[in-house]
Length: 181
Image (cartoon, rainbow, N blue to C red; front, top):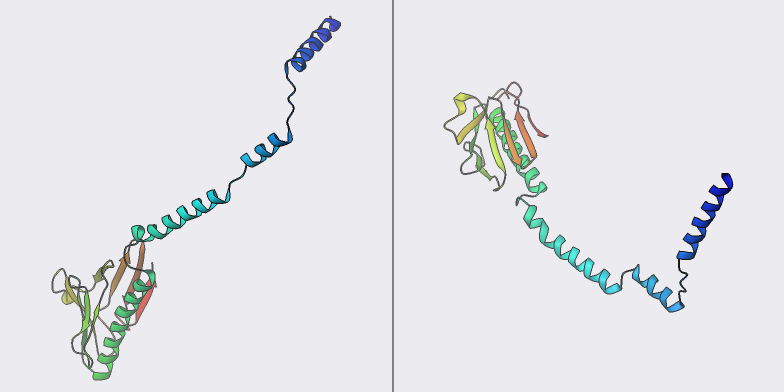
């Protein structure tokens, strides 16, 4: 029984080896096979040019028009205006307001020694949280600083897509801080 099985296995193996044809490969055929696995210099340059063109055209498609530095500069400008108003309120010993016009996208200190108006760039979403007493309507409101350095308090949020800068005004001390959210 075992001898029958072994003879059958030998016949199958002999049949498999006999059915596989032997092929001779010439030196010319070997060089063609080797070239088929690589890329020519022209193909590489064409791919690099396509990538360069796509890279050059794609930033304007994904950009909101406001760079990170412009966004940060707008937050610093608003914070600077608020700090100036606090300084002037303490120095002049009188209330000093900072007026926000969300529709016109402006921030100004109307009673300052040097009247300043800051314009917030398009593409930056502005939100102002302040007291009801300082709100004129949906698009105009103020933050007021007092001679003792205190303020009405509030928060100015400058947002571009998923990036936000929060300019906080502490009501007790009038301290103005910028936080990135």
